[in-house]
Length: 128
Image (cartoon, rainbow, N blue to C red; front, side, top):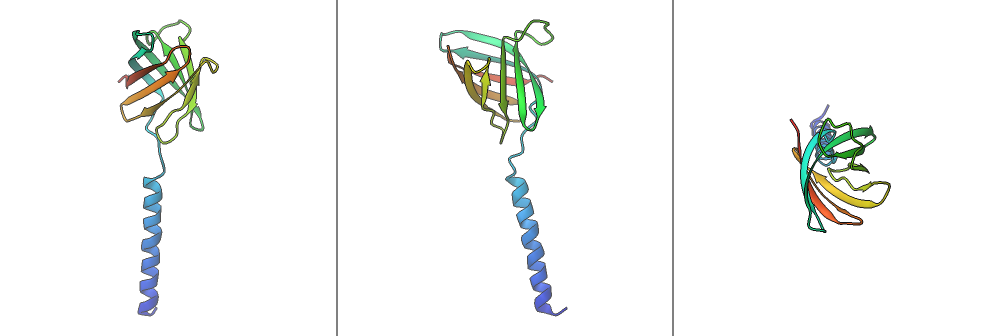
């Protein structure tokens, strides 16, 4: 191979590797979301509350969050939230559309808000 072809080939390989690395960095991969969480929040009626949540992976980025009074309870969930996690953002509806909301996932914390008959904010931490 002559020198010009070798340089062109090397630049082509460098360009392909660079594109691959950039696409991986910008792929919007999500932090793990499924599992057990503990949280607290406040609503527009002035109530502060604590809760537990069990997040279930339904596949294809879809998740269901069961809001419970405590982990391990046999009681029916207080709220059921369904949504799609994309780029660590989780827009959702709850209780068959009565509430809408969204949240953002970091490695160890989920912070969210909701609107409905009452509005509110909440924060959850992963149970280890």
